[in-house]
Length: 346
Ligand SMILES: [Fe+2]
Ligand SMILES: [Fe+2]
Image (cartoon, rainbow, N blue to C red; front, top):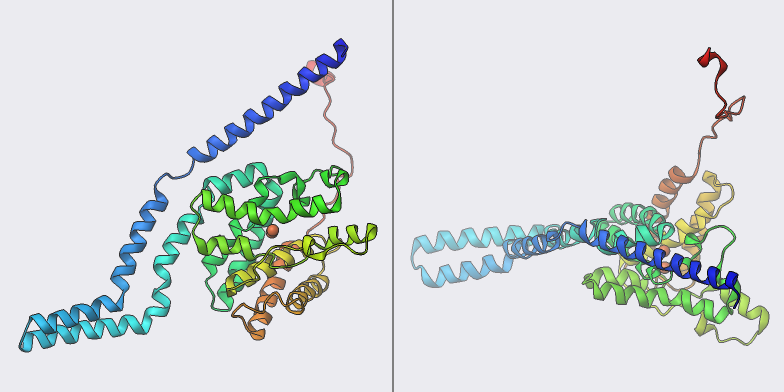
């Protein structure tokens, strides 16, 4: 190795060290800026609210009063508890979400270490995540599903891309695609692994199971179409199962909406000229394709609700991508000169 090669090897090593150091510093900063005990406080409040709202506790108290306090006083107090318990049962469907919402709120904090890392290490995925969280929440709310759970689930759905962010198109600088040098089977394995990696990262960070479901189910058992087609160009007899996501398919209305939002956002973002008509056509095709693929077969969501979801997506995506105003270019290009102004010195 000559001197020039040795010097360039040393420079390369130093550059790699600096990148590594700045990544570690970013991760450390991500850890420190999160409000430290917010999740614990909200967790305790959630348990307390769950106990206060539980109608069974009121019925148990009523029975205890009936047994322990004989006579008219006991009757009145028992009647009171039964009435309060009945009221809670009547309203329970709505109120039962309150304790869960307190938990989801803690995980909706964008300063959580995983989300901070996503914003620093995979900015393209982070932007996609925020856009589809808005879609998922609006559509879930419109069909009576849990909008906050949908939003938080969307925040974490692609967290597995943190392991190899540059292998996903939204994080690739123009003209640099590491898949150009890889076999289709290797590329498909990397893309597929973001689901497994996401679940592992979520478990390591204590992300609750209902949020983990969004990571596991957002691609269902869909094929990784681009690399499957590339592999078939070389060999017709490839095993399609090796080019499919592991699943399962969505099991709840919220994860089903997340799957649709994921596909709709990515498809509309790739439109060359997004008009209200092309956005609607693209969203309709996406929803129809997922139904035909059987990806929504296990989700408790009706065709009527899917129509509402589709309309919400069209409304929001049209607002996001259509009607960008083109600014007129200045008549004379602005130039910044370093030449001393003769008038100023005169
Ligand atoms: Fe994904
Ligand atoms: Fe995604």
